[in-house]
Length: 329
Length: 242
Image 1 (cartoon, helix red, strand yellow):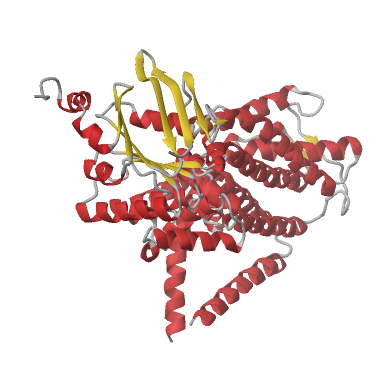
Image 2 (cartoon, helix red, strand yellow):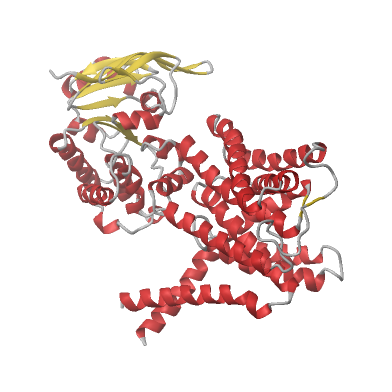
């Protein structure tokens, strides 16, 4: 029984991976669908990264946009000014995001800023950076800065189709999921879950909560920073609006709706909700400005009301039920 | 008489104008079961928090095996070998019992050893049947044992228990006392229990300190304490001694 169950698990994983790998080939020339699929993956990566600090460690972080923007500006500026390949730029972008996260996170955690105050501080961070980059005319400024144009260049990460970005993002998602899975089953993961539940109890059991939170923040910032670098290459420009408050909040929403601390929950939420949002935007956007957001928000409220544990546990239950039926027959 | 494992000297803690602890000095000896009692608001939990590092005293010192641990963070103090359980259980609500205990076991173990430690502690605390249950689905008595189990998993040499017996029925209490006695005798863990349940204090403690309004008013064996007029006065009020 156990073997069949594991076999089915593996089968499902292989099937999902197969679909994910073949999907862009099926839509091939339809650039709109490709961007849409890549955007879903992008949110999947961001929400999965958020799961480390938000889901496991229970810190309501609203600064995804800050690290995304830092990654984008690092890779973008290096490419524009010094012709550094984004392949290197994305790693540096991730590291700059980590540096900044540690710089901000250290005092925040040192002085015990937590819960809603942490949420507010991190949300403010995004806006501070946005305005700073608007004013900082050497790097940012109010006008878009375009990355050098190439028809097709692997070195510059410029392609005539969005397809390569889909696969890069898919790879990044796999990395984010692996990192999550690894942390969840390691000492750091247990420490993060414990401090997320009760910080004083965790401290008494020997958890250096300050250090663990900083580690979680750094891992999250790195993944988001790398994603930001690719984001810039995909759209071909950088702009201070990349430091986006609404996007930061949406990442947190996906993480929460997916089910706090559940490895694959945020991806599920991203696939479901970003699809719903984009479908609504495409179909209602033209009729009345903002109508799609009203419907989208209603969907969120309904989930909060009827599935407060998130989509992750719900899907797992459904999957378990399906499995037990299959295995029995 | 064995050497002191913990020395608290002239500890003072103020909250605004309220003096929660006033010049408290006491000594816990290695291997004993020590108890701190006192009426509500006497400062027992505050004393615990100041020893364990959750609060910082305004003045005074705490020495553990001769090392000054005053004002050190709790995780450092846990590394050195002191941990505690809380008066109101602070469960890791969404974690299973096994996962909660694992948090403690990571303190001194890696890899497969972690699981071995978890299994050992679960057996000692009679929690094996609850292993996969989530902490938020548990009753008070097993939950108090979970608190004890995850603390034990860090392998303390001194364990502080804040009202571990509160709210337990007589048979649950007897079970807990059995476990504690075994820990003290077999594992040589020094216990310091803060307690309201007199049955537990009198049944376990070898020495007792009585706190009232943040001050030590008496110290001695259970027999001495139960007949001390100042203690009776603190508990029952003036005029009760006659």
